[in-house]
Amino acid sequence: MIVAEVQFDNTLKSGGHIYLISCSRHKVLYVGQTNQKVGALGRLSQHVSETSSNTFIKRTKQIRRIDEINLGAVSFYAVRLPSERMFHSQARDYREAVEHIVQTNVRNYICREKTGYLLVSLTDANGYCRDEAVRAAADSVFAKLEPALAKKVD
Image 1 (cartoon, rainbow, N blue to C red):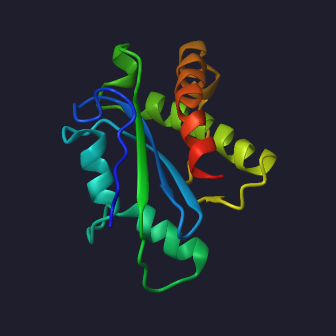
Image 2: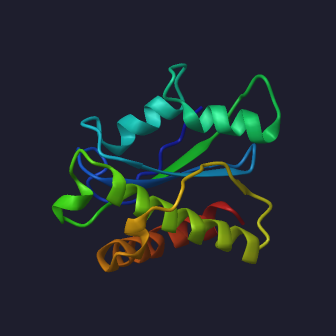
């Protein structure tokens, strides 16, 4: 069963989003970015499908060292990125920089709060991580996701 708790506006629309997937059964979190026409909820559908785009399932199985997976309830939160064109263009470098900073903040949160959850998503830092607009967007996204983290990982 998938439970999509849509907490923020515009998750059905296309455009740049940063999202968090939480699976309490396997105690994993996944932070990702998308700019697909199917919107953030469409990206969630891909993550839990049997397609090659299901990186959430692949990473969960890899990290938890399991061959078959029954996710149970999955919670999903998405935040639309600011309106600047750099966050909504085909090039994903700026979104990936925001994603990396948010992932770092989530990793720090789960370590600080000793939640027992693992972050299964991976990103690499890029040069845009130092950009002021990117850092501001990441701070804003994390501020919106933090209450969901506190709720989901208790």
